[in-house]
Length: 289
Ligand SMILES: C[S@@+](CC[C@H](N)C(=O)[O-])C[C@H]1O[C@@H](n2cnc3c(N)ncnc32)[C@H](O)[C@@H]1O
View 1 (tube, helix red, strand yellow):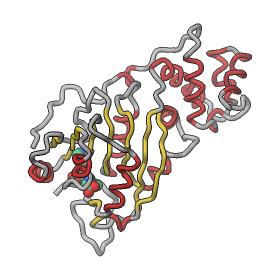
View 2 (cartoon, helix red, strand yellow; view 1 turned 90 degrees about the vertical axis):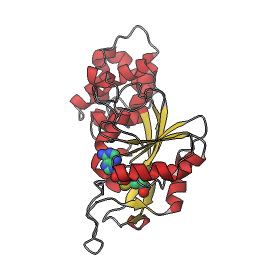
View 3 (cartoon, protein in one colour; view 1 turned 180 degrees about the vertical axis):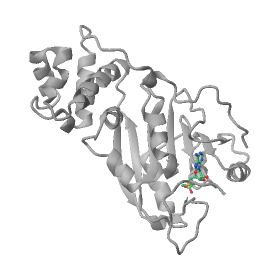
């Protein structure tokens, strides 16, 4: 049996595999309502298990890729939904599986143990092909991500480029066996910043989080000059004296978009880590079912 890395369960419900399956249909509907898909979409179900989410996704007519590490689940899922030509089951690890290079959507109940790493793979690269997502994640994790004011540069980088909305709480009783903590539906929608704005954004956030207690105007003064900085900040609803680390991420995104239109401004190149494709080089895809 596989291990999803869900938090440990009650001593009354022994579950050595650590896997917790979604049994509440209304939560599956809620996921799909938060991220509607149709025949034009390429959708990934990440950690598909026996297919509680895969099956309704396939019925939408979308092209679905279901990734599952456990070979037995992957084989059974392939057999169960055999004949659906819009489904591909990939028996591989989410930490290393090749992600599509063309635009895609994610609808999934992802394993807790790999949530941070998976979110990093999906949201971190600039011009990422992820367009939107609805994911079931651990409640506390969802709350941290959905904070209007991020805690650090990485979270700000994600939240300025994607709307991260905590849609609803998912009580532990919606899973079998029942985990010890609740989960949440987290909706992710790309803000469509574009590469120039993303380049400006990375530089702005670098300055902002170098001194998060310092005023926002100082954070961008180096790039723009004091006077211009004040006007640009105010135009995006940022008060110049506000601590840089207290500025909501979406405002940094708006500022980056505005500054990207000024072609007299030059921004440092994005670091290599943000250009890297969301794949692991040299790794071969394992068998599919
Ligand atoms: C929380 S369960 C969700 C299963 C199913 N989607 C559902 O909602 O009932 C997570 C699934 O992810 C799989 N899994 C855990 N770690 C994985 C990894 N690193 N790569 C791929 N699949 C993984 C587990 O085998 C399990 O089937």
